[in-house]
Amino acid sequence: MESISIKNLTFGHTASAKILDKVNLSLEKGDVLCILGKSGEGKSSLLRVIAGLERALSGEISLFNEPIKQGDWNALSMAQKGIGFVFQNNALISDLTVKDNIAVPLRYHKMGTEEEIEQKVDRALLLMLARGFADDYPYALSLGMRKRVAIARSWALDAKILLLDEPTAGLDKTSRDNLLSLMDNLRELHKTTIIMVVNDLQVARDLNGKISFLMDKKLTYPMYYDEIKESDDPRIRRAMVH
Image (cartoon, rainbow, N blue to C red; front, top):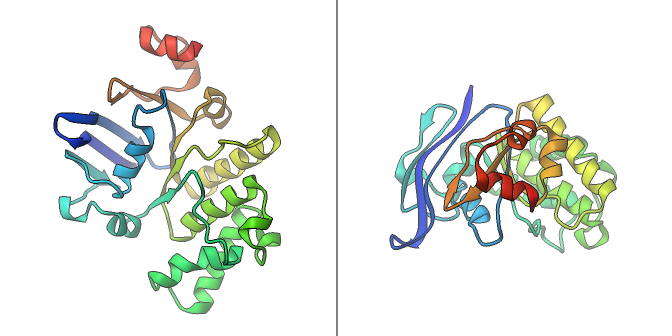
């Protein structure tokens, strides 16, 4: 089943200053897509537009084969339709415990009784192997654990598509590998579609995810690592080297 389809997405501060120009993308349920590109190319902007945090100049988006009306392409509506966004800085609330950080958006959106919310929080903590940190505060956590909590918070909102902005940035190899293993569980156990900005091809290779490069304001066609290596596109070959 197709989870997301984007057609001719154009974004910029003005029509004459485009950051993204007619971007197209189609992913099936449970796909993992890693987006790479030079700094300033607009990778994070692309995620923000998909999530409704920024407004596209033009283009169409469908979720699970349902076209989204232009007026519904906003952060609240997209979250309600199953889009979860994980910021690069994790955006955890410093004076709330881990479990309360996860519960806040559930309570705000009135997603169940207090007992049901506690169950959702517990499931999210279990999925990200963070139960033992439920009563801790963000400042007491390692960077890797803060990232796991941020993912748990988005997933707890019944996110079927997760958008992650450089989730492995700043992590040592052990923390990175642990995080990728847990993300793989999201895909395998729950068929969560994952779109993530990364700065390392090895991440895509380890996740066996598809890879697209954002260059010249467009996304290249998604391919797996071994397919990328055989690409005849000189731009992609140069990106592989760097």
